[in-house]
Image (cartoon, rainbow, N blue to C red; front, side):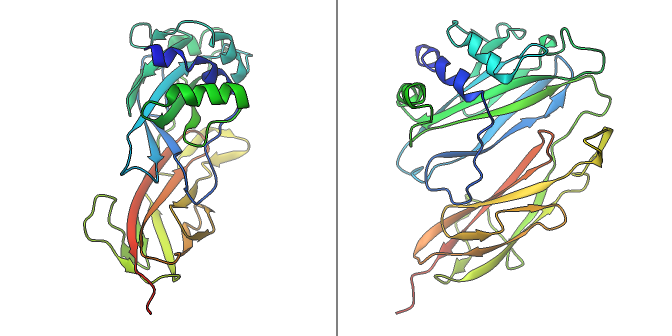
Length: 293
């Protein structure tokens, strides 16, 4: 808990803007996406939180992470979370209605949506909870916080990300999309735990594709910004090589991968967003062969 308390200045600064990365090549420890299941619900709803964390040095070190929750009052900006940065936080499980609390110091988290998020809001108006996650190599969370406090950016070896949860009494709350059939050149991509994976020639070009699950594109009731259905998009990521495009819409979910010179293992990821907090992801890997002499 002492380590968690040292991270409070980091929470306030991180809440200024969502900073999930858009760069497609992952060359350092990164949080690519945070998923909430469900992404929207009524007060009292239990939400499971997890994150797609990618670390190029995963075989050499362990990663630690901490989750915080902050509930801005009506009319307040996300930066209002700064007001809690100097307070001693309670555990969310002890006080689910706390305006600021520690959810978890584990790789996953569970949070109960508070009534507080709707207090003072007009009937039918949604509230929000700001989730902040800090990720760093074991034993370096305090150093990550100190660097962020002093420099305004995370240290090279840690990452800070936020996610907004929607609290509403909607009869049709938003749901996460889903992804399936992650393929390369029309062949299924094995997951990251697979022992046997496709082998690719050095500096070759390949087609990546993924399918959105049935029902992923939901009707928006009431319409949002003039749209009656969700505007889905997917983003591709790789631990090396080049992707084009790195982001597509739901009318086109393919990307071209140009692999670098081998030999090396290549991890690939694709993340779907629905623009309303819904998120899904899948992953796979390939092996790049050494160049032919």
